[in-house]
Image (cartoon, rainbow, N blue to C red; front, side, top):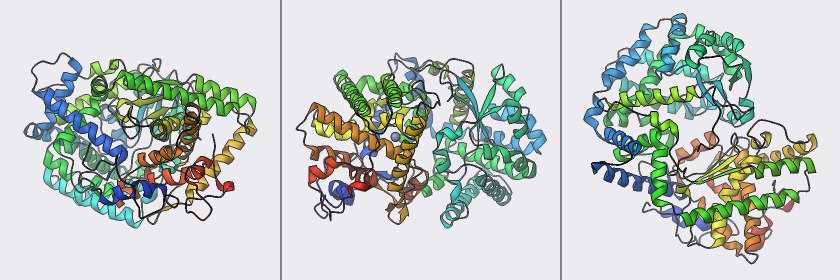
Length: 636
Ligand SMILES: [Zn+2]
């Protein structure tokens, strides 16, 4: 845990709780907290992540010194960790990287580009589209092939042309120039200008973050022949050689992009070639040495406001975790997560699900049919707590050549991973897979699996502890669990059934009623301001619905197991879990890209919707936390 430790802090006597719960609970800590130079923020979730990271680095350092470890996968993870720490060895990868990008110079036009596509895809080049295997949202027992648009240099398409966007592109350009100079590539101004020009063209045709937040609209099945003609590429041959046979359909996640793709590539191939060269170099240069990693962090630090590069131990841990996350997660879980806590958390989850059912049965705005289907979704929900019993099969393929440089090893591992995921295309989906590893400080609902996952690492104080009060546990992990369950019924989850398929299980009237409530939630958050910047109600609506449902179900569960519960403790711990101090750049960035609302309002706005909050602290009209009854929103 960092010295900042946001957990046991004093209240802030400069504000009244009745006017600002979040600042009353967290203000004093925030005032004194120092954000570590290599981070964009500090507090709650981040403190726990920093703590887990520190612990795991100590573990890996100790394990690195042992001669024999009786766990092959863990051995491989440790060997990768050691490779990252060996800066001299890393430098040997530069020629291989330069060879990789120089290939692009030989591909002179769009026609020859098409003939190279298989090779470029297989070798992890930055392509003008992304292609990959994912779970089929209309039949979650199967996989499907999805085509999507590429990521942009700026975090959101709406930022192009704005002052802040231009300033960030300026930083990007000078960083790339320095990298190109350092590796000895000529004509760098021309290369950079073409790169930016192509990215700007992309920004006009790809989805914005707000559009991506509607998951259902990313499911557009196309005939393979139609996708072929839009991509101007014999995708059928590619698919056949890559996957053995051709699927009936291909899912297009960003149709506007695909409609414009052909023209873009035909008319601006040279710009694309520069863009691909620069982006492929940029995404790999950090592996080459610590010096290059530092240089290539300039842009990401400008985005987040971080003042320094993470140290090499953290970098080594994160890169190892990128490839061997479940190996590290199982190790962490076995060593640090007890059976007693697991049993206790399972009972909280069941209690929360029970409350949900109870509330659904007493729901006054849904018909019996819709209620029945919603309860079916709860009854079939799979619960994953702590860490999986064993490391997933796919990890056994992750073998790398120990005599190579880090860059070459990353290439090798990335290739194995993407070949493995591609090999799943015609296989059945295994719903026992975990999407988060045990060492992750987070939790999630996976709509395709209808499952909820609570990794061991989040089951800590202040979210959860066997030694804190029941009220605090329900204000912490109870609300987080309720939040994840609520994702089954947020604006996206509500359109998917108990099997994880997009399927309308609502009556028309019920769904219209739900949409009206969703609109109220959008409106409630859309009006909010944070340090001069606006919250986007549409972008954050699914998470706000989930927070709202989380508090509702956790309060009801607490009430059932402890009728005389002290709700002050509940709400105070709820505000405490959102305690965070952010750099202004990062705060602004998140308002543009993050589907979660800012922590300040996740605490302060949500609690205002609950009568229990008014009663617990005797909040009255005139207090700033007061919201007239008719403006309060409760969905589930
Ligand atoms: Zn969520």
